[in-house]
Picture 1 (spheres, rainbow, N blue to C red):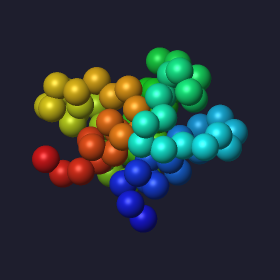
Picture 2 (picture 1 turned 30 degrees about the vertical axis):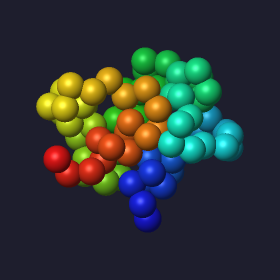
Picture 3 (picture 1 turned 90 degrees about the horizontal axis):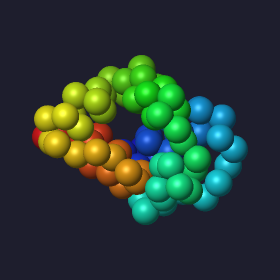
Picture 4 (picture 1 turned 45 degrees about the vertical axis):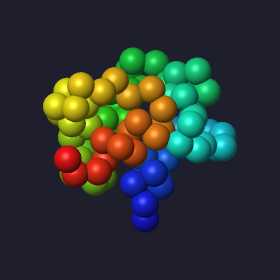
Length: 77
């Protein structure tokens, strides 16, 4: 499973339905995720894959906006 597929699987666990998702999909505008959803998503990714997106985002000074951004954070620095 690719990192992008892992991110999409975690997003689907949030129960937002089954919209088409690509690397360019905007988390807020396209998927309607709010701040609480984004926090829940980071917890899900950590639980499912052992990746601390919050820490990696801070280390890389990256505010994830798209699925592609989250995929970049999944990769080991």
